[in-house]
Amino acid sequence: MLVLEKEKEITAHASGHNAEGIAYVHETEPIIWPLTRETHKLYRELVETQHFSFDFERNGTISLDPSIDEKTTEKIAQRFREGYGESIEFLDESDLRKREPNLSTKYCGYGLFYPNDAQGNSQKLGQCFAQASSRRGTEIQTETEVTSFDIDRNRIARVRTSRGTFVPETVVIAAGPWSGIVTERMGFKIPVKPIKGHLITTETSTGLIHSFIDGPHFYVVQNGMGNLVVGGGEDDMGFDLRPDELRFEEAWEEGAAMIPKLLSLKQEAKIACLRPYAPEGIPIIGKSTHFENVLFATGHHRQGFCLAPVTGEIISELIADGETKLNISPFSPDRFL
Image 1: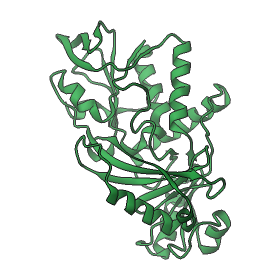
Image 2 (image 1 turned 60 degrees about the horizontal axis):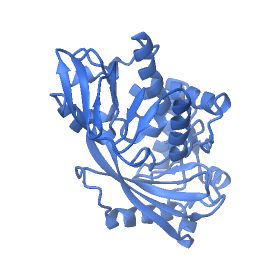
Image 3 (image 1 turned 120 degrees about the vertical axis):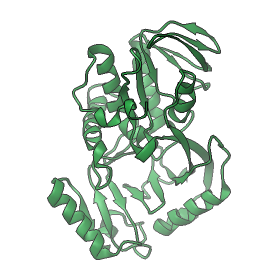
């Protein structure tokens, strides 16, 4: 197996710079619940049987939104529990203080808690996958850009790159926000576009928060290194990777409103990155009937880190067996082709 990576290293963009959250089942996006349930099982297996070390912890998510009143928030939790039987808790002011003492209840004195959500370090996970794949014979060739394809009927016969030509058995399109550009070189274009997000990493401050804190527009999470990450935002600016200071200010302001002790921490790094967005936020995973030897794994938007294991499982099943145990028809690329 050969992996072609355009950048000098893997996890150079949003795959290594993201919220680092691993959502389980939320009241939104029910279409991806089968994927998130399976991915959590796979994450446990990676930690317990493959001994992947990427700061995996199940500390849950606290969702705060002062624009939704307390009674409505409580009803959301109740409807979700009764309707789907999934764990979701309503937290009042006292509950919030017990669970996260450094959380400001002045900003919002109530919230929703998703206890099954987890966190991890996406850069470390990428290295774990790369090392495990290399041990099994996979070659990862960096600084290699795909420039064109030779197509014979409905098959890709050759992949031409900046560093040579390759004859593939199967091609997997997993180019993130650039997937649309890559497929355009195949004679069509799937509608994946870049959506820019911004992240601020602080100096180390161990134990400031435990859960993933999800605000109305931005989030705060503490990674395994002890740094806090404040970020979010969704800007449709094409492939413009230039950071926007206004977005950093907005993220820091909302983050500090939720966690006031943020203001005592030094900002160590700021970065803007691009996420791959497909229409309606639904990823594109699977095989197209238009191509005999092409598979797609893209368009995950804000769920890339979360859905990485299950996406890999689906693609490997399709390559090995031609079918998957999960129903992936909602994610078919044929809905665009």
